[in-house]
Length: 95
Length: 506
Image (cartoon, rainbow over all chains, first blue to last red; front, side, top):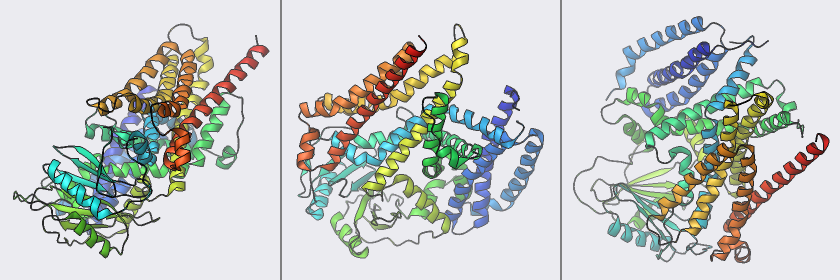
């Protein structure tokens, strides 16, 4: 049975879908690009290809999960690991 | 959010679909027209003669180069689109501080034509949106693309019985009929919708995923330009500051064609034409193959080839495949029509989705007294859904009605598009469902009369194109008339249905 959806809850999920989705899309893309290494352009393209998939996936998940808190914590955990990886190795391609 | 996954997805599908549906409808209509940009160009430049085959490319290239050196040496780039069956002219454009275009025939004659944005402007609307700064437009279009991807994915998930839905059509049942039509249009072209949305996002990834390129290549030194040169080849070398003019472009073309064993070259570009480090880039067309990204680079001032090692990888091939599928440049006439129809099916899917949403709220709306937000949305829906095709045909009318020597007529043509769109929107906001009938009749009249008014104003018209065998212009005129017939058919059917209903329930 459908229940009435509160506007605050929708707003929270919308923020997660758009902001967290975008953040993860870019970070995952950079993560893939850095992990793939050479050729550098191919890595960037692979990152871009997956970035949009990740963004869509997170947007869908943000509206599908039952526990927003658990989902947010899970995203924060993943973001920390990815950021740690990028800060250690991601900048090796800087020109 | 809901008791089960499918319910959540249904909610998401509805609301994500509604969020930017008007913009997405606009993008789908103008983008679909882009598959016939050259045909629209030809119709909008009636001064260009009908050419069946192109005589001498060397002569035309030399003439175009002389013209460009005289009129556009200070431009940032030159673009020479070489003749092909769909566009049997040599089309020279220059961009940068100087902007302009010229068309040449096979004997090297510059062909005069009216100043118009043509099909190219109409096609570029779907990602440039006009009036807006280009980067801002890219962000908006990319956001809309992502929402489309979410709506498509969630839409596919909520269908329990996708095949049964596909073969079900219940006519005369208002919301149910529209929903069946929505399902039919969505499912029949779903692979196309997914491809076009995802590849569209890839096109704009340089803007939307800028942090990726900046992280990977560094902000200093132009992250994306660095990537571009690695990915596609050295299309831009750092300017030397020394003046030089390009060597013979026809010699460069001959050299490229011998290397490519006679495969036709599609595009020739010259970056920074008055600099010693100017680069000439050639892109070839490989028949019916999707891959058209084969490129060669030459130093423009000397004509020497520039060697480079292109990045080879699966991700590059996949990106090129998707981007080429999006553009459809490889497609022959039949496939082009399929792309066009699938694109219109996408627009239809969005339109029917909107109608379903409104129909479901109709009863509640009719019971409400006074101001009702749903009523305003319904009126705006009518304005946008009919305003867009009206705007397109008004653009064509403006092309014929504005005198060819009118100053800045190109801008006036473009403004007429948006005046018509906003005019239709305001009319439907003021008149409601009565406005729907007016706008439908207006659509039918504008589309149906245009080929005949064109003939009356000295254009080719239907009969002349039939006699000359000019299939491109004939098809253009027939599509206009078919659209009018479809709209009139819809109006008559709707009128009959309403009459029956009134007799039943007076």
